[in-house]
Each structure stands twice: as structure tokens, then as C-alpha cells.
Length: 223
Image 1 (cartoon, helix red, strand yellow):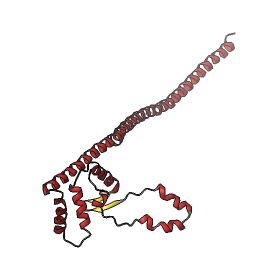
Image 2 (cartoon, one colour):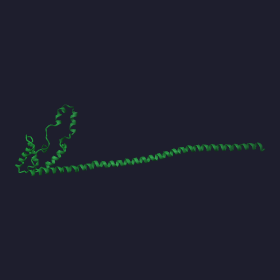
Image 3 (spheres, rainbow, N blue to C red):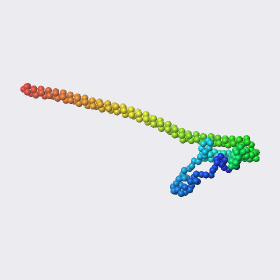
Image 4 (spheres, rainbow, N blue to C red):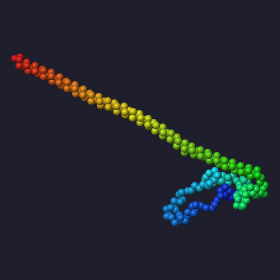
């Protein structure tokens, strides 16, 4: 292993300021319930970079991978540490690189060795990216695809229910139309029965009246 103590300091400029520490006096004078909220709200620190926001959680993970694979002797990481140290001095970039390389030469390190080890650490980072992509794909499969499959099932169930409802509504409409038709037929039948009953009653009364009249006349005339 190399002798790098703090890999993060090689890539991130640490200013030594922290917003939560600045607000500490206010929290001390605030009610106790507010100070109790602070531990339950973890911060997601991000660092501005040319490629966008750098999440310190992933930065720590990737730097840990570099640290685990830190090679023995003076390599790219030690070279970058030298550059970092020289950055505090008033010199241009070319002078800094040449000065850092002069330090590397004292340990028999060549430019090709520096670029080779830098490429080695790039490969370490790429392997971490591959593992991250695999983990992300697995998470997508377990969390996203499962929900998508369930969503398809629910959509199909809703469609089936809608079709059943439409079928039931069609049956209800058919039965309603039949019921309305039967109501009309009942009224018509009632009217026909009433007319028939009246006609029968009238006819019956006529015949009874005629026969009774004949009986009365026979009793009168046939003595």
C-alpha cells in the first residue's frame, strides 16, 4: 500500500467551514425540541464540479475503492499528493508538474509509470461503476419492474371490471326496456279484461233480462 493518508484531500478542496457548525450558537439558544430534530435529518452534501454535483457519499465509496487498491511505492496517487502540496506555493501549473515529477524521479519513477498507475486507478473506478450499474439494475428490477408488472395487472383488472360493468349495464338496460314493455302490456291487458268483463256482464244481464221477461210473460199468459 502507498502512504496516502487522506485521499479525499487529493481531489476535494477542504475549506474547514461547515454550515451546521456556524448555526450551532443559534441551535443552543433555540428550544430543546428544535435541537432534537437535527440528528434525525441527515444532510446529503454535494460538491460542485465541472461535470455537475459530486455526492460525497459516492465520493467516499469510490475513494475507499482507490485506497483498497493503492499500490506500493510512489505512483499516481503519491504524484497527485505532491501536486497538491505544491499547489500551496506560488508557481504555475507546468512548474508544479515538473517539480512533482522531480520528486518522483528520486524514487526511480518514470512518466510512463505514472500514467500507467493513473490508468490502473481509472480501471478501479470503472470496475466500481460496473458494480454500481449492476446494483442499480438489480434495484430497478426489484423495485421498478415489480411495480410496473403490478401496474399492468391492475390496469387489466380495471379493464375487466369495466367490461363486466358495461355488460351488467347492458343487461340492466335490456331488463329495464322489457319491464317498461311489460308495464305497457299490463295496462293494455287490464283494459282489454275490463272491456271484456263489461261486455260479458252486459251480455249476461241482457240474456237474464230477456229470459226473466219471458218467464214473467209465460206465467201471465199460460194459465
